[in-house]
Length: 65
Image 1 (tube, rainbow, N blue to C red):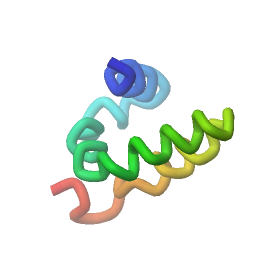
Image 2: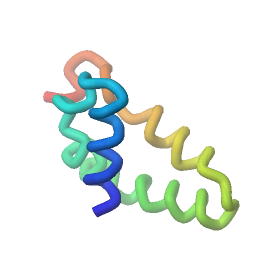
Image 3: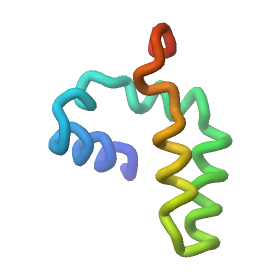
Image 4: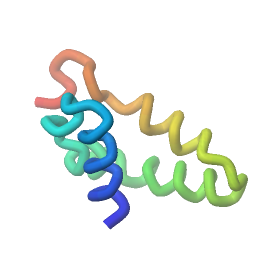
């Protein structure tokens, strides 16, 4: 449910995100995704999760194929 909201918020902020396969990308990096969430929770700081999300292969050529 959290990723649905994440996708909706990103798409509302910038329509480019509506066409990105967020679920597929997160699934491909699922272990690191949950580690980043746990670290953010442990530190009560969103920086680890934000850094993880920004370092995903969103716009790297060929990464989304």
